[in-house]
Length: 220
Ligand code: SF4
Ligand code: SF4
Image (cartoon, rainbow, N blue to C red):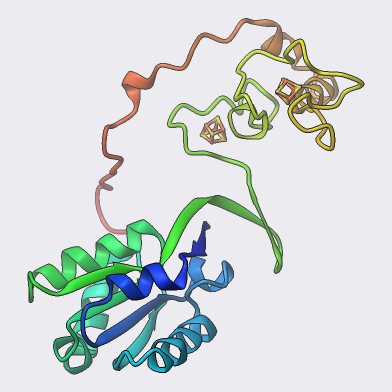
């Protein structure tokens, strides 16, 4: 899931022009506690207490799903049309779903992002989200026994450990186990030490698409 954090309220308010309609996202922003039903309602009350008229609010189950966003815009036409601004409490992908969809009906409407997009996170518990993949576009998990050095080593080292590892701990943060020790231990158990004995080449960023997109053949 995409992890987000709310922007500073004053910064959001400064960007809102006139009255506003609020969109939330029922998947990632709900789990991040930045744009689910509770946070959307709290934002509505906060904006109203700052004398900003709120013409409606709606939580879409996935703001990154363009077709769902278009349908939500049709279903909330009145509230959106009567607002000068639309505040979106979802990741940057969801904000751009709103920009693309609302642009088709009104190019002048101000779209305001209410959160900062942080990382793709694994849900450890309802109150703990952890980054385990940074979407590098050239996955090395098959060579590292399924543990990601790109994300979990603070230096992103493809060949480790670095010279700073001490007592199996990371030199950048001594509270962390060195991820390359974990990779070594798991590779030993998995009989795949040969994989990490090979020097990994620098990542080939030329294979990464400048703008990530994928098209599937046929229906799902
Ligand atoms: S190497 Fe790490 S950052 Fe890259 S795709 Fe694999 S898990 Fe994600
Ligand atoms: S000690 Fe290990 S985890 Fe820390 S920066 Fe060096 S290689 Fe990466």
